[in-house]
Image (tube, rainbow, N blue to C red; front, side, top):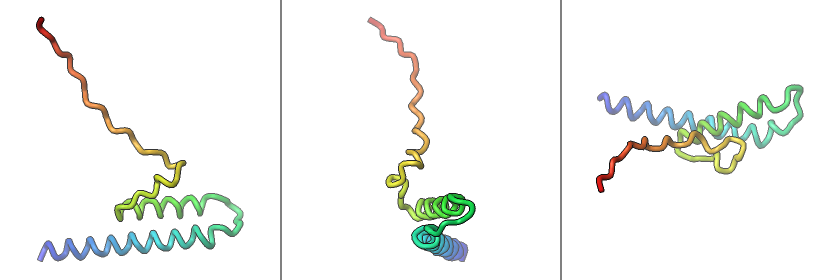
Length: 86
């Protein structure tokens, strides 16, 4: 019974992420092009919602958006001092 609730909740989250991605993409492609008094704020929020929703769904769209950066670099493994006997 518990696993069924988790699966159902996971489906709801995925459907919500799909709806957010679709609505934000439609906004960016249509209404976002209309001039407004506060430029770039609503488009920026819609783009951020789109990127986060697609990231949750498993798609990486930041490779097409150069201004998002590459993310945090992975930490390098710690180097230890090694003693070499000759």
